[in-house]
Length: 277
Image 1: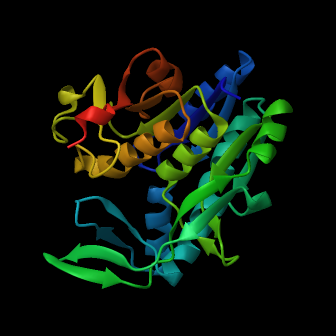
Image 2: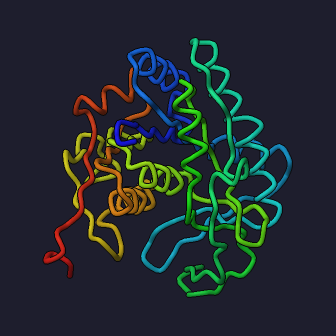
Image 3: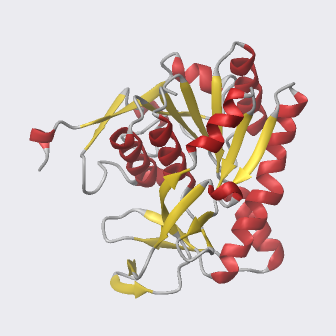
């Protein structure tokens, strides 16, 4: 299934989901097979605000930031992704003539995850242990289900939560979920769309976009500012998992996927083994 493109539509409010769907619809019309994976950070935060559920983030000792998903936050994540973000994307694709099927990681056991245990995080400069985080890392993907949908001409529209080994849902970072899907499918390309033109050497300067960003095969990513840390970790996991190419690209522009494939993106590569420090 190496002719598949996996697209991650970022949840950043600046990303234009309708432009993403229009571009995906054009690709499908040209005979390409696409899996669309999405997050929904803007929808999650907005819904949490309406419901009065506080949202917090955890910063790991290596500087990577991730959402703190306690029990109340997990409910908000599920509601926002399955009830707000996904219907918007599926509706736009269907309106463009594409048979799209919305799935969370729970449907058909699509995304299975290992529940994370105790987290080490930095709070006010101190290292603390966080025990109430309901999140996990995707360990397997039901490629048979995705293959059946793709073979029928449908576009799977996939998001967390995932199914943990205890049979309960856990949140999973959407970039890393997209990486797991791309790796499991042996995708030709994973395109991570975000609210920046690519990986920036200086998060405050959009002209500092890098054409190529090499990441080590383990350890902290070379850039963590602007929310890029988890994206680079996801890119590494996709490449190590079997994806052939990973691009980080601007989700704010027209035709964002095809523009990325045409070179308007940062290509993420792996450092060679001997370059590991």
